[in-house]
Structure formats: structure tokens, C-alpha cells
Image (cartoon, rainbow, N blue to C red; front, side, top):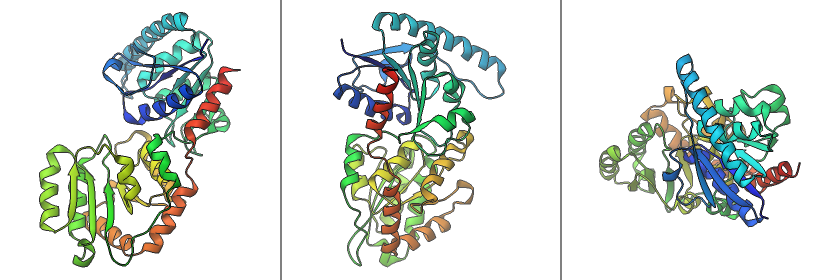
Length: 364
């Protein structure tokens, strides 16, 4: 009989990508994988390598909303009942939660059934759903050495495994960083993230257009941009004579990240860990409205070792971003040091490390 792992994840890429990376490792080790999420799961993660998908009742709430919290509690309990019914059928050896409110019912059901459970926290700040359940699961794994907002006992016992990244990103760990030379192109990759990309969509082109002519003419820019900002960005780059490719989404992100000399982007947990694995210097702009400043703490992880510059939204202007770009792009030695610093804290084999924790938990 193949061992069965239920992977429970929210509906965003930040939760699903690590779960998918773990699934691929577990399948290679002979496991059967079941994906559990909320009732939208049928439309999510079409490429997720699961033998089965289960949709569970779930809901979120806003802090300070007792009625919403009560409704969410009932929804989670209903979802936990649905999960327990499925568990009686498939007999999972372990249930792994990746955060986000859709992961809660699967974990609650497993806790009530006294099944082995693991939580993986992707951010440097433990999320609300994970925070509520962390003290009741068998083991906690985390991406960063710091785990703020976690119960003290949980933070002290958590196993640091890193953030599982996609195989194409992991392959970049073997490629040396080559800083830009005295001549030739300087490649900038600008990512947006799933939230708050408008700021970078509109401000980054203007900041690059404000660079000195000699530097600007060497740039090759690839920028993820919100659809409504694409034409404005193209016009700005065209008027500044900058070679730029603009799209709302890049499928070959690994190839583009591998070729970049500098990356500008948000500091979601997945992005920060991918930049580290790829060994890329970065300018990080934490999402100001992120709960508990998790993006700010993620960015601090790279900034503290000298791998990234952090630009807070409240202080970010065209002039400040343009100035930071000019200082970095005209200093190849510093870019190389930043790249080496990023790689020094990377954990390319995070998926394997997490799989080890999962197997150890399943075996008791």
C-alpha cells in the first residue's frame, strides 16, 4: 500500500507552489498525494500532481469582527467534518498544512482524528491560520530562521527547512552570477506579485527613464505589469529608448530570473526564497498593507546579510528608486557581493528537507 499524504493549501501561489514542490518529491519517494483546499479547489492548480482533490468548507474573517469570526468558525468545523469523512476512506498517513484559511479544515479534521500533522510556514511572520493551530500539530517546519508571532514553544521547536521552490528555479542554484561588464547589456527583471503591483507597474518605468542616458541605453528590462498599466509603461520605456518587454505574466520566470543582473519586486516569501536560490541581488518593496508586516520581515532576511536593498512604500519615489538603481548598476562588484550574500542563505533543497520532516512525522 502506498503511503498517503494530504497537502492542504490556500488558493494563492505562495501557498500552492511550496505544496506542489513537496508533492513532486513525495511522489518520487513513492507516496500518493491528495490536495485539500476550500470549495474552489476544482478550479485551482490544474497542474498540481495530486491523485485526488478534495474541496472543504472554509471561510476567513477580519480582525475585530466577532460575527465574521463566528461564521468562519462554523465553516471550518463543517469543513473539518468533511475532511474526516474523506480520511476514513483514504486513511492518510500525514496531513500537511501550508497556511491560508482553506488549509484549516483539513488540519482541524486531522487533529480531531489524532492523525500525524505538519504545518509549513512560508513567511518570517507566522500567519493567522497557522498561528491558531501550531500548538496542536505534531511538527512545525518553517522557511526562515525567525518565526515571529508564533507561540514561543512553537518557535523554539520549529525546524528550518526553507521554502520549497519549483525545479526550474532550483536549477539556478548551480549557475554562477556574472555581474554586468563595462560594456554590453544590463538586465533588470521587475516582478509584481499577486497583490499591490500597481506601484511598481507605474513607478519603475519612470525611475528607469530618469537614469543617465549612457546607463539607460544599456538596459534590457523585463517587467511584469498590470494589464491596465501596460500601455503607459511601454510608452515611458519607448520615449526613454529603453529596450523593454512588458507582460502581465511571464511563463519562463526561471529563465528570466537566471539571466537577470538585478531583480526588483515585492518580498513575498516565495519571491525572497527564489531570489536567494537564484543568487540574485534585489531591490525589495514590501507590500505596505501586508498583515503583520510579513513582507517587511521577509525582506529583512535578505537585507540583513547584504543581499537586498529594501524600499518601503512610504519612502519610495521616482527619485529614490532611480538613485538606488544608478548606485547599484554602476557598481558591478557590489552586485556580485549581493549575489553571493543571497546564495549564502539559500536552501535549494528545501522540498527534500520538508519531505524528510513529513516522512519522520508519518513514521512517528
